Length: 206
Ligand SMILES: *[C@@H]1O[C@H](CO)[C@@H](O)[C@H](O)[C@H]1NC(C)=O
Ligand SMILES: *[C@@H]1O[C@H](CO)[C@@H](O)[C@H](O)[C@H]1NC(C)=O
Ligand SMILES: *[C@@H]1O[C@H](CO)[C@@H](O)[C@H](O)[C@H]1NC(C)=O
Image (tube, rainbow, N blue to C red; front, side, top):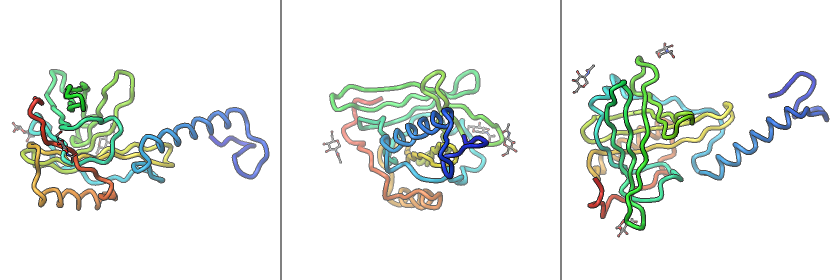
């Protein structure tokens, strides 16, 4: 971004391409800040440890959202995600929620393990041509809980993160929630930012 002979600091001359790059950066910064001020942080993403020996086959099926770091794109309640294996080795993702008008809103995407030696690190994409979002399974016992973290770096200058506490049922014990909070805190996430998801009155969901 900073080219020979000109820089943002210390000289009065800034080239047109620098200005363009700077404007793009500003727009990205403002967009990220506006999208979720609470999930926007300076510096690059933390690199928390992920679930050891992650077995994606055992992870398939439906998970219910218990708590999350604020996510703008979720307007409803009863949020859930269903994962199913696809023939090509990738995973189909169906996220569903119940809107205030009692309609079910769902979106389908694809998850892939990019590096087979890091099976707990996936990328999820809901729109063709849009870069996939990171999906790190930090911890799961496959049968009751899962802790998922997603963090995107922007130029190493700032990062935006999301996290989800998921469960196989619409409720999770306080004990497990507290253990998962500890894991998130160890990853550098401020657990006070988590919001509790509403999983009551979800009988119309499937
Ligand atoms: C993953 O889990 C499936 C289902 O339980 C099992 O059949 C398979 O052997 C496991 N894979 C590994 C590598 O342990
Ligand atoms: C896959 O992960 C391993 C272990 O972390 C790493 O050594 C290797 O470079 C990665 N491969 C690619 C293609 O990123
Ligand atoms: C959750 O949803 C139910 C049913 O729609 C509603 O009665 C309740 O107030 C909601 N709870 C919270 C904490 O928003």
